[in-house]
Length: 459
Ligand SMILES: Cc1cc2nc3c(=O)[nH]c(=O)nc-3n(C[C@H](O)[C@H](O)[C@H](O)COP(=O)(O)OP(=O)(O)OC[C@H]3O[C@@H](n4cnc5c(N)ncnc54)[C@H](O)[C@@H]3O)c2cc1C
Image (cartoon, rainbow, N blue to C red):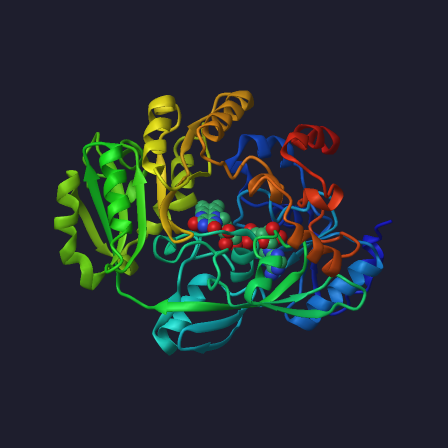
């Protein structure tokens, strides 16, 4: 039986917030992108927010929470999209944003506390060793490092470096276990996958060690193309140009940027598909010859750090956010168009769904291949139709990482991750960390067919 009052009484000296409005605010993330999650999660609220300032305080909080059987949901900046940091079974929100120090930088690597903001890490590594994080989510200005590892997957720089899950893209994780005497565990090498993208269900990350890329002078470039597939073919060819340092290759169907990207208004020709690029300055002179075969033309250029809105804040999950500012009827998908032949699948889905699902693609390295993720907009009508659109993609061989579900398995690979489940048994034996997010914890034999039944049980 959970005893929150007894738990809070044991936290003398640690900052606690119980004001209802503030607790509600810190119990939410960007779940409202999804009309399905909005319906399911809108009333979710924790009982308190606890704000430790150092690892020792985190350990005290976890020990007290175990003694009093209080669920704990870790939180960085709360920019996740799927209710990841929302305490759906109540208990407390563990706000880790005060653990924000960069601990050391070396040539090629950095180690920072979990609450350090990605933009601050980049500033320090640029100044000290001329390096920067290999890639970051488009929430770079607000998101924390711990939240990125526990909740994110890829982002600006993935066109060169791939996904967080790929070996080498995270070097080390230091975690605290959820036990009466919390233990420190350092995961390195392949063991990192035990807690990478586990939504904070199997340990509280306190420190992260990341590899660095050489820092570059990035330039935002926008190009226009006659058709979506011209833009997509250019993006594919450009992503394969390994000699050109690049950080962003984003393709948008005609109309998305022209209608919704305020800071670029006037620069974008109507009726054209748009490509957003971040290219290192020394390589810009190669662009015209690469654009021309696909009918592309540059229409805008600006140093990334001089832009009021950097181009990356129009890309990845920011595209949907920019559109939602002026059109509340849209939602989105997260689709893998897998290699080989992935461009044919993009063309197939464009032809099948047309303007109901305006195409937005992010080009990435994926297991050494080039591929793209679709973060397509969806003109939402009903949940049944949304489910139909998802099913159409899956039937065409394009897996959906469902952004309309809040569990690890449904938002991920649609299967139980036995390594992460085994680590949870070790690191959170009572199942008190972010409960309700790992379906396998309650049902190790979970399969996708059981989703509907589970929703009915939970809601
Ligand atoms: C506009 C927008 C754009 C985005 N773009 C991208 C993108 O390009 N790429 C991408 O991958 N994601 C993207 N996201 C999702 C999200 O912003 C990122 O994953 C981000 O890195 C999350 O960081 P955060 O600090 O906000 O984490 P939170 O939202 O606070 O937490 C995310 C998850 O991690 C857990 N967690 C947080 N800190 C810890 C910790 N120290 N230990 C254990 N668990 C922890 C939480 O419980 C939660 O499950 C985007 C979201 C939005 C709203």
